[in-house]
Amino acid sequence: MIKFLGLCVQNLIRSLKYLFSGQVRMDSIINQAVAISYDSIPISLIIAFIAAAVIAIQVAKQFLMSGAEAYIGGTIAIVMIREIAPGFVALSIGARAGTAISAEIANMQVTSQVDAMKTLKVDPVGYYFTPRLIAATVTVPMVVLLAEIVGIGGGLFVSKLTIGLHPDRYMYSVWAWLATKDIYISLLKAAVFGLLIALVCATQGYETKGGAKEVGTSTTQAAILSTVYMLFADFIINLIFYIG
Image 1 (cartoon, rainbow, N blue to C red):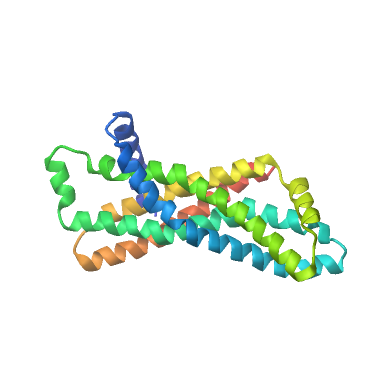
Image 2 (image 1 turned 180 degrees about the horizontal axis):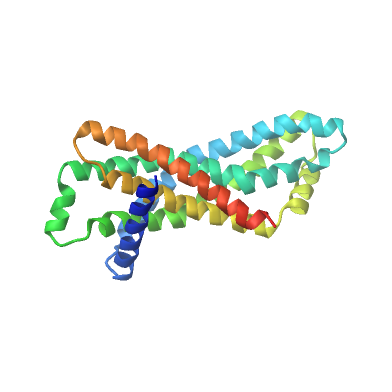
């Protein structure tokens, strides 16, 4: 994993050089943004809604029994924004779009399309990686923000349905508990997760050698590695901003 991390850093540097050379096409970034984030919106929002609904079911009656039902909204908002929304959305995008990135680039590698790019004196890392890195870093936070709104709304709906909690009491605790810092950190997490998904999956695909069987193996490995690196990044971000 240390060697692979080194490859990821090298590819990131090459992508940044390609970006600042002014060769990146805006239509390529938009196409990748659609493939990575826009097409992932339905599954991401469904996951966010269900996660918030499950949390509300788990805590609503316990909070009601202890007379703390007024804190349900704040609890769900904090959990969703700090951890559930950025984490679950990133995992769903990694599983759907990250594996597609890895498979696409791996297929280009084993069919010698990458070698053809080198023959034309075009940096394949910059050409293939940069639009995906930009698109994922910019648009994954947008999906996470939508998921947070849907998640809080899902918690409100279930709380009203299960224990009859008034929406005003729910939203009052949301605004009372929620800090602007939490939203900023969640969007930072989402941007880092998006960058890691694109970078790790593209690097794994680029390092693929062999044939069709290796493409499948590489795709599976990309999903595993992107998840592991996202969890490490999540731990580090929480350590920096929430400890001390």
